[in-house]
Length: 162
Figure 1 (tube, one colour):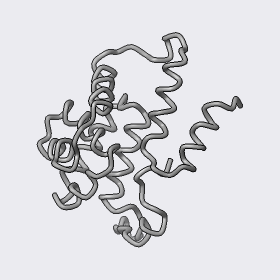
Figure 2: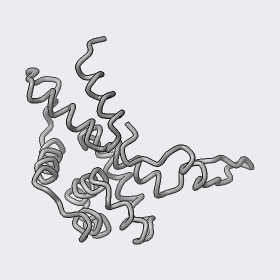
Figure 3: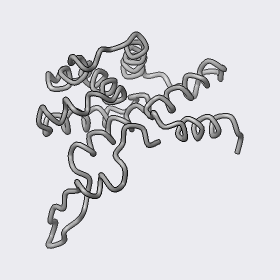
Figure 4: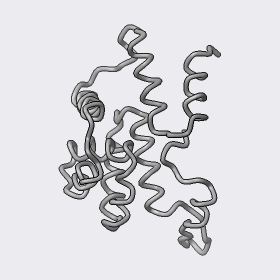
């Protein structure tokens, strides 16, 4: 899923190269790492507390200008809203409810469902399969990306059986 993720060239141009035990290793810059964390949390329906902790810690390391620029992506706003509900971090609240982030009813519903998945210890696999759940999965997987190729990929993987 490409979603709001940077292209390879953008990621490579903005990479960080920390030195560990005498070796320099190319890795994503913190802003791109934050974007990846938000997208992966959304793809997993915010069911992992690990995603929330990573999102909160990365957000606290980014300058306000970087967070404001990233808040234009709905998946980043949703992940920040869900993580704010868990952590209460004011940094995340500024991304989730900033002036550029107008949270829609769909986002509020998504956040509520994510909050419930964190609060209830039930497994989705234990529930019966329904068409509505399948369509919700397709919608959740496709919405992070504005690229029609990602939509086609998600729909084809969701419809075609292995």
